[in-house]
Amino acid sequence: MQNSLFNVVSEGVTTNDYYTPKWLFDAMGLEFDIDVAAPVQGVPWIPAKRWFSQADDGLAQDWGGALVWMNPPFSNATPWARKFMAHGNGVALMPVSRAKWLIDIWNMPKIAVMLTPLDLKFHTPSGDQKTISFQTFLFALGTPAITALHNMNIGRVR
Image (cartoon, rainbow, N blue to C red; front, side, top):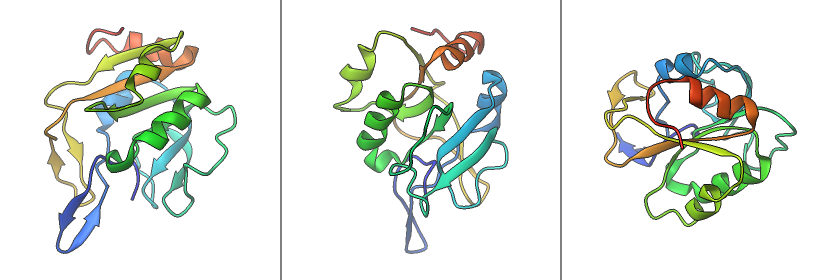
């Protein structure tokens, strides 16, 4: 139940599954080595060679030197943000509302940060598209990821 945004209760089941839209990956033009927070079956449009699902506990896995994609469960984003910063190579889609880690990532010496579109629609496991009520950002660490954010042309990159 990873690669997600926040807890949603549907038919008595709580899920963290909200998937990043395909057009965002098309705009980045990157192939990732690992999607570190994917649903069990992966997401077919995410250009990653492999993925870690909740069953694999992507947070506990060694990401090695891999170029990672990370859209973690927003209900518990802090440990994911910390691991992403320590790893230093990839792109993460994260919420920043009251995030204690934001100052740390903002002050990293080599980082690119981009506000995502306010009307960004995520895909649910049922195939619906949903917007969320809070703002997300893309954070890029490492040269390929930083270059990809600058080349996306969908918003200002800091």
